[in-house]
Length: 529
Image: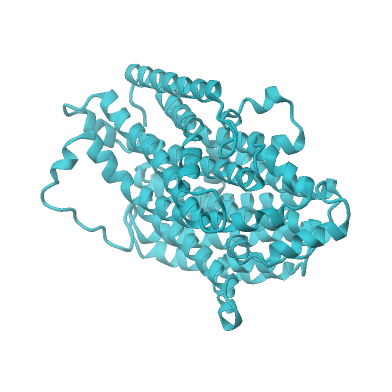
């Protein structure tokens, strides 16, 4: 038996388990690339208007630090500006999620030990996970490139955009493969890989925001490599070569580390906990907080930074959105009719609300990992009741999402107060007004866990659907009945406009009803693995 024996069956099993989530995620990224390009090309009447708007964007240091430099002073360059960085980040995160789930998570839950009892080589699980991640990354890049062709975009630039996503995904696959060898827990591996992704983003932003030699920092980040492809600009598709080389080197390192550790262990020994637990861990809520506080801290820092950047861009919105088409697009995305600054904040706060919903979903899905690992059974063997355990995790998910919205509103208000009339008093209520839609997403995840725990991951597919409906629906002129399927379509037009009381109350009722139904379902069903 070779060390790769069983790779094909494990690859088929991994695809069968995650095919719907992978398909939905890839389609969301592809549709986002297409929608962004199609909407942008329809905004400018002629190349001169596009070049004028592009110059204003290129001269904005905050925009450059957030998304990278504009590839070219054209409508096509504007159309891929956000897709370059956001597509890179989300493709990298998708590769990370696939590799970690089918390696360290399976190993931590004990399923690898059962698999290893069959005709399965030592390298097969890692090889299957890496192959699935690489196939997903390549499919995402190629489909994104093909999606731009119907818009009339240049074929070479379209191919370069696909290369952007592939560069980021290739390197992140290798980074995650190494991370899962270092630690014995899923959380630890995730912390290492996500920290590497965050560091790559920060280093790239520092390089793009610097002058002179400081710009060289861009080349120290694999996200900087991705932006250097410059689709619809220089079209440096050859950046795929160093990305492939680095990915191969990281995978070779991961393989070498795999041979040096035992099954179920990591190269870094787990630290023993304190001899006595603190009194706070004596309750289900205290335990849930202990498990989730690290992730919430990381999200808080990220939301504070993004909020500051969003607020700093507000002062130049009137210039960037001078074109009536751009202003109309922002109004459609935010649902607002006030000043351009208010419309801008409305659109950005909705995007941040989607991120808060992602945090809520990820936190709620911790219920599933606790159950499948057997730890839930241990907790429920004590005096802790099912509803108390379920409610503690759901409370951390909901309250944490609200906290992130408040942080983003506060940070944006502080940084925009000096250049606009919109401040903290306006943006914090506007950010919190999106909370009912976020709580609906948390309730849906809890509901899936309560009745169909093995399908709880479908919450990610539903969030991807909401993103497409809420963000691209107005631009693509989808019917109102279809757009209304997204909870983010019922939020009103804050700041500057009026809230939608009926919509907000309806969303709150849906969230409460979903939570109650989830509690009833979990109370009746058996624990599963």
